[in-house]
Every structure is written in structure tokens, then in C-alpha cells.
Image (cartoon, rainbow, N blue to C red; front, side, top):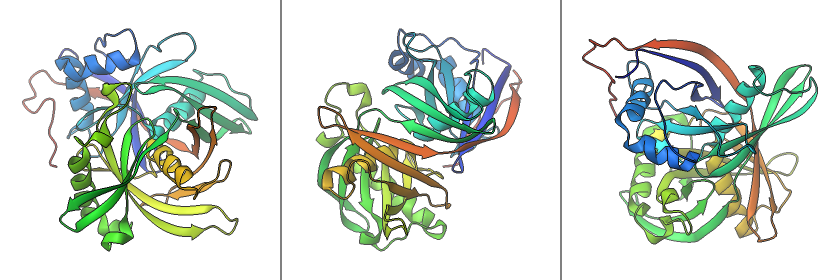
Length: 335
């Protein structure tokens, strides 16, 4: 390793970890955040830092985080490269929410005691905004204003060990397959998590090379990032559409939150089907009981513009060390 000390600030959004690295101790080259992601995927030093912070003994198979990098231009406050145990992702709503809360709490972005502050962030899939709401001098909630999202395919049949399932495929900063868990006899509950992981992996890898997984404009965004297994819970007392989901992303990681970019993809699917009208609310719960709410509008081209609201909380700060003589560097994962 080219470094011996790494400082991080850790948050969770809806139970899903987000390890912020404000000053990565490695060079991450590129003229844009998208280019820096490609560099990071190929560079041994950057990828080694990801492994050190994500793998055991400093992390775990479901760890998630981000390296802060310069934005593409002056229109954004910061840039970020999102990472997990298998590499670098193109989008992350729960991470964007955490970064918004951190930016205001740390003083990086000034915010009123009561009001709203926008934290504009460049991510590999484009420019997003963390709209931070404050009350009494404290962060009360954060809106993740996503990139434009859209339905790719309403029904794609996928052969699995549980039989043939029908998946919708949508883009919400990353491409997601979506399957009704009840259609294969599953419930989105903790006791079913191993079966949900197995099915999510199957669907992802079955569709990853399928034509529906190709991004029309930027092949760096191609591939199925995750599978959303959802349950329809009807409507809330206030009349909002209510669903519970678990997103199995990368290679078998289980999102503890309702998944921000996955919620954007669900909003695109539900809007296209007519189940969610523009301006109406989706209440989106996670497998651990945390909640996002989402609404959407349509732009002039008919693309869906999702806004997903949640909250993130700090869990600690770390000064990680890497002993040059440690034979287990950068670490290991057991899944």
C-alpha cells in the first residue's frame, strides 16, 4: 500500500452504511467524475484503498462508501466515487443523502437554522442534489434529487431456480431489474434474506448481458446493477402508494435502506405503468423497517425526475492504519 493512515467519517442512511473519505490518500485522475471512476477501477492504488476500507477486518461484505473528488465544474460543490465490495458504482441515493447531511453538519456547506440548503454533487451518472432541510439548527431530512429516470422494459422473463419470473427494468442512475417477491412465494422480511439474496443474484446475472441492460448513451453505465424485490402493501392512511423492497446489488450485497437510486428506478416504473401519478407519493420501506418517501415530476421530454426523501446519521469517525508488514492487507471477504 502507498499509504499508512486513512481518515473516514461514517454515516448510515436507513441502516445502510456510508463511509466517507474526505481526503483519499491516493491520486485519482480524470477530467470528470465519470473518468475518475474508470481510472479507479483500473488503478491498483485506488482499488487497493477501496479494499482496505471495505474488506474485513476494517469493513465487511455489505460495507459501502465513497471517495470525495473534485466536481466536474463550478456548478457542483463536490464529486464522489461510490464503492462497495465488488467495485465502483455509478449512482447511490443513500450515499447522496449521507453526503448532504455530512456537508451541512461539518460546515462545508452553509445552511440556515430553519430552511433548505442545496448540496450539488457530481456522481458518475451525472449531477444530483442533496437538498438538506434544517429545523432549529439541525438537519431534519434530506431530499435526493436524482438524475432523470425511465422505464427500459416493462416485462422481461427470467429463468431462475424458483421458476420463471417477470422483471421490469428501469434506469435511476443505475439499471435495476424489479421482481414482485410474492410472485415467487417470498416476503421482504429479514427471515427470508438469504433466499432474497440468492434470487436477486440470479436475476441480476441473467440480465446483465441482456440488451435491456445497455445504456443508450454511455456504455460506462451499462449492466444491471441490482435486483429490487418488492411487496405491494396497498396504500397508507393518507392514500399514498405503499411498498416494501430489498435491493440486492453488486454481487449479493443486501441494501439495508430502501435504496435511493433503486427507489428512483421504481418511481420510473410505477409512473410509466400509471400506478404513481406525477406529484403523488410513494412510501418505500426497507427490509429493516426504515423508510424513504418519493415523488416525481416529468420534464419536457417525458422523463421522470424523482425526488427521494430520507435521513442520515453519523455513526463515528475513524483513523484506519495499514501496517506495511500486515500479511492480510488489503483484507478479505467471506461472501
